[in-house]
Length: 567
Picture 1 (spheres, rainbow, N blue to C red):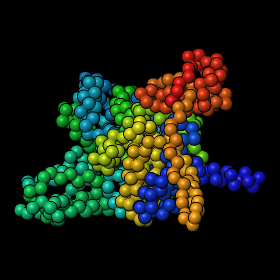
Picture 2 (spheres, rainbow, N blue to C red):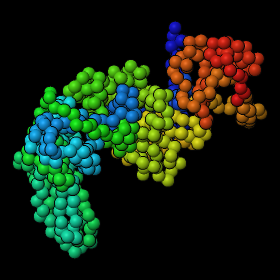
Picture 3 (cartoon, one colour):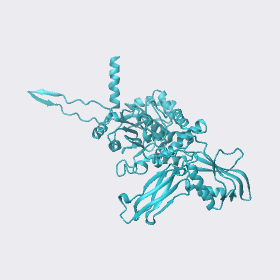
Picture 4 (cartoon, helix red, strand yellow):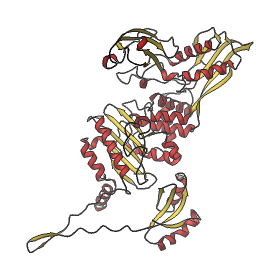
């Protein structure tokens, strides 16, 4: 028994030891191994772990946790899902006059913006409405999220990444103030009377740099209507500046922008804003739809949009457990959806708000890697392309520009204080595709962590082997002849021996798990290789006769068109 345990321990170390290249990069980084989790595996192959270090150790994920929220939303809703916003009338409509209220019910579309108001107003006008005698009523009851504008996660509560969700979202809860220094002109990008701006800027004829390049901004949130104070000196030579802050309620901003757009189009609105649920006798006018979910999740992943991730979590909670959506329902929904699809591995997991803007979220590298593999198995490159593409877009557009990684990695990043994480897919020069997760929680500096991740990913692109297995190389045995120590000359490297497999199938997408399970249940070993298509190969066999002997079984139980190949 003791010998078995010892053998198992040695075997485990042998299988999951770090490749020398990865080991060297860690040593050069100066970051302690205890602060690093790595899990790299060739996609589609069983027992093909390339590197594993602290893979089941729980860490702070930051924004890489978004992939759980994103993937669960795709599984539940599908790539083509569109968020609705419903418009009703509550009252009679005759001769162009709506003798009653215009009612809007929000379902949490996080992308609703000023750009869509023209279409919305045209559709209201198409209902032959030129005058509304009542109020504009907004129903934001689909989300139960309170009234906080900002998460207050850090010392920058008015920054857009801190915006809190709402069922009636507008412009991502961001108020934009435009400053044109040359004319000392300050305007709001959108008509919005829910906050005010006080301009105390002084223009100077100095170079546009340093303290003269940007307005000083102070926000007074103690008033009923928040006040944005612009002060200091700014160069006349500076171009247009946009100040984007989380200041007010999105439904108020939407109300003012919609009312102004209606008036500009010739629709008179006599009433004001009221918050209440859609009356039972209200009649639907039309439904405005968002862009497809595929575009929204791409924006969520590539730009690491916290607000979108929060909305996805809440929507899943409402769809899985019923409205109103809550954070608690959303957390449970994500876990249940992923678990039901076999996408969630074992280990401690805490999703918190779904965006990663959290110190309490927890996950390990292996769970993330297994989720990436599951997602690729179901959706292939369509899923991969929702992630940031190295050197092309998103959070790694600049990071890998001009390197061998460009267009060879599809990743989600995560950054907080003392946290630098990355996970996704890397394609090597040899054409092999790997799932890669590198989580680093360290006080040694995020730049050091990023450099280590970059170096490991570049090493992987150059990597041209199968599963890395650590073996102990014995030193040459010394022989003593006439008092002189001589060593045996190094043995020549063995030539590559071709091996035989049974090709059981060829697919344009990664094979269905049920198909692969059928092979496993027959006690057969297999690999999945990807060139232009996916090939399922059973074996390996030492000679053609051995392969032919098994071929009859494969043809009878799996695929009548199976045949023997030599690689």
